[in-house]
Structures are given as C-alpha cells and as structure tokens.
Image 1 (cartoon, protein in one colour):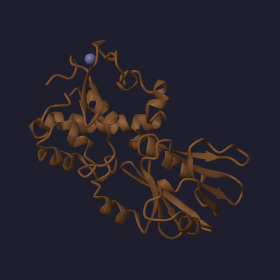
Image 2 (cartoon, rainbow, N blue to C red; image 1 turned 30 degrees about the vertical axis):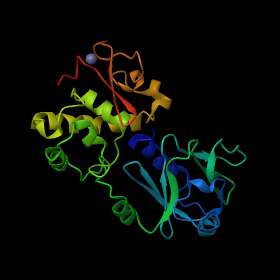
Image 3 (cartoon, helix red, strand yellow; image 1 turned 60 degrees about the vertical axis):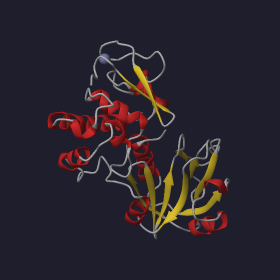
Image 4 (cartoon, helix red, strand yellow; image 1 turned 90 degrees about the vertical axis):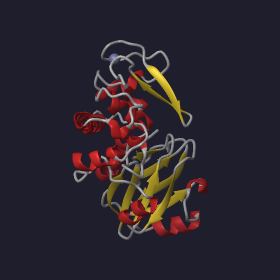
Length: 266
Ligand SMILES: [Zn+2]
C-alpha cells in the first residue's frame, strides 16, 4: 500500500517531469475513482490548465494547478506514471493527463481504492480530511511527536498509523520504524519513556528518508533498500535482518504486522 515514501516519489515525479506543463486534455477512463466530480466536469476543469507544482501531505498528493489542485489518494496499490510521447498507456490507468507536447501522466489504480478530486487549496483539503501533521514536515518536531504519544492510550503502532494524529505511516512503515527503534508494536504509547520516544522519532525520520532516497517506497522495490530494513522480510517465514530470529506476525483490522520477538521486546 502506498505510504509516505511512495507518495513522495510520485510527488517528485510530478515536480521533475510535469511542472510548468500545460494540460491539452484529461481523459477519465473510470469514473468510479472520481470523488465529488463527474467525468465531464473534471475533463472540462483540467483542459487548458497548467501544472504549477506539486505537494504531499501524508499519503495524499496534490497536483497544484493555476487555480486549486488535483487531489489524489492511492488506496491499496495505486501509482502515478509518467508516459513519454508515443509510450503505451499503463494497464489500469483510470485518469490520464495529456500535455500539449504529447507526453502524459497516468493515474493507475488496479483495485480502484482511493481516488481523485478537485480541491480549492491543500490546506482546506487537509483540514477537511482531518489529517494530522505530516510526519516529515520540518515543523513536526520531537516535542510535537512526544505530545501525541503521551496522549496515546492505544498501542504505539495504532497511534503511529492514525492519520488524524500524524499523517504518512501505514502498516508497512509503522512496522519498519518500530523495528529500527527496537520497540514492540504493542507497547502502550503513553508508557514509552522519553528516551524511547526520541529514538522512535529519529528512526522514523531516518527510515522514511532512506526509503525515499533508495526509491523503494513499497514492496515493489524491496531489493533496493538498505540491508538492515525489515521490509523485505515482511512475509510468512521471514527472518530478522539483525539477529536472524523468525519474525512474529500479528493481525489487526485484517492486516498483518511483523516484528522481531528478540530485538523488539515489550
Ligand atoms: Zn531480531
């Protein structure tokens, strides 16, 4: 599932390939992914627009237009692909932006979770969605992180994943940062000592930045990640990259989380 590093990679793709480009036409091939707007209205709205910039908040991406923004969420396995002139449209493309020079940008989403819509401003949309601060925002410091954990009656993994408290981490990267900080996922958040909270905060920053840098935000590019990452071992029969112990798995809300029972003791 696309989490902060994946969406940051999409964000950089837009900044690198699409900034300043004019949209000749937009083609919606699946209205099922649209949120609060019809196919016709979106196509009309985007025709002749220009991509001014791009911004990310947590797992949400905002392609900034001359007026307002195209807001995107990627659900379970959505992605954004740049399609050079003459290139084939990727399978499961639900929305395509064709630029005036023939290149394009495809919003791909096989399982049709997540979606696309228009918003007036990033700030307004973030408020409407009720998202907490982005975990990589420079303004989100140790003090702010500590205050959130101190109020957490649930286990630390649930608090890390709660997008209303802090935005960006999902099932995969909450496991990764807890592993890197050597903390058990089921420790009650507010019981963590300040030393452990500081370690977790540093691990979160370092891990997310490393994942972005290695260009492997998700399980797709796991072989690209640093050798001490848990992520490539997140499967049945996986082993701890640090000590070799078989990983333990725990289910919550239908999704499996992993940790090392030796390195991450309660
Ligand atoms: Zn271990």
